[in-house]
Image (cartoon, rainbow, N blue to C red; front, side):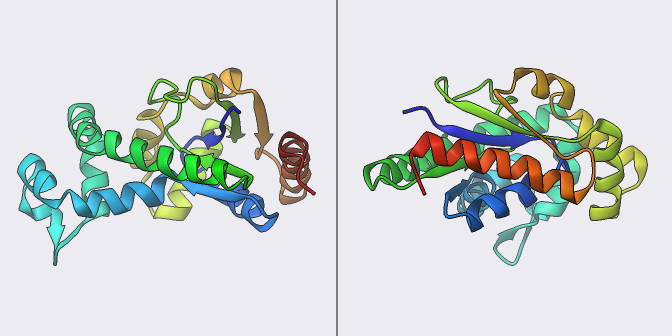
Amino acid sequence: MSYIILTGGIASGKSSVSKIVSKNGFTVVDADKIAHEVLNEKIDEITNAFGSEFVKEGIVDRKKLGELIFKDKNKREILGHILHEEIYKRIEKKAAYLQKQKKPFVIDIPLFFEKNGVYKSAITAVVYATKEQQIKRLMQRNGLKKEEAEARVAAQIDIEQKRKAADIVIDNSKDLAHLQKEVEKFIKFLKEKYDYQ
């Protein structure tokens, strides 16, 4: 069976959709949570690659590291080499376990398209908001200046490209009531796919 991947752009509303999916009885394999676990297990590699100032009290300073990698593509690629193979292995392990248990699940991978679609047989659902909305939401959520928010959005594949590449689009460019209807359609699709009531 194909994996069902939930993805989107930064500040497009994917986390909100993920929570609703979870509340409807689907397990969400969260690539970000796995990435945070792996990050703190790779402290030596992080220190060697970026310097000890990115580690505080035995924990990677994600905010400081984030500021660095969003400004520098080469640094972003170095971090990717350190983390992504282990993240992929853990996602695969969790997915295999859930399939064996016959539990319906979705894999939440923010950078699915940026990683060249690692899961070749995946069905992709993209949470969509316009680039302008992403920037505005990012500024509000993270307290960033406009140019900082723009840099973070620009570090990812354009949301319009992701929208075109998606099998399913969950439109989060309007109000909350509209998003609720969009997610209900997605939940209906998941239930039919998994024959889950």
